[in-house]
Length: 183
Image (cartoon, rainbow, N blue to C red):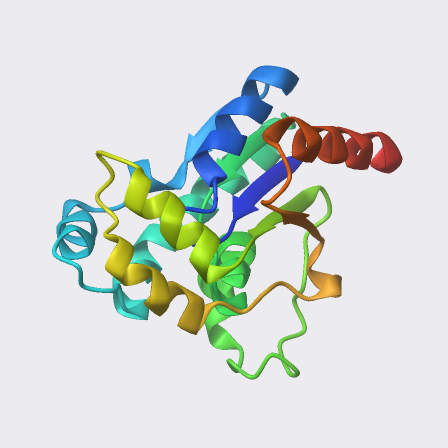
């Protein structure tokens, strides 16, 4: 099983990833660690990333997912995965780019054993969290651009929707119950 924890910056992806990794004993792959230096510098300057900026990063993360799937192990990945196309690149690599960006014609929706955990919340709640945190390169001023491009996952995308108003413990229990149901 591979869980990709997704959502806008500041929604708690890294916190949940670390908690879940510890609880389940699964390796954690932090998507931010795979960004090229240029992307981090751009976000630190308050400039939103473009699809061209994100594509090489997403392809690196696709490779990590493929390695984990090939090894037969369980893993957790943290990645914003804001748009459906980004999630498709994570799952299918460059093959996803050969299909129309029209989601109705994109036949690839999911891979067995890969689930997206979508952490969602209101702009105001997440913005307040971002303003309070220290030492992260992502500027709170970029949050609006993330909400603007966000395409919440559709039902056919193997997604579990998780409300961030709940505690990390409650969210983790729901994920563990999800795992039990899939077994």
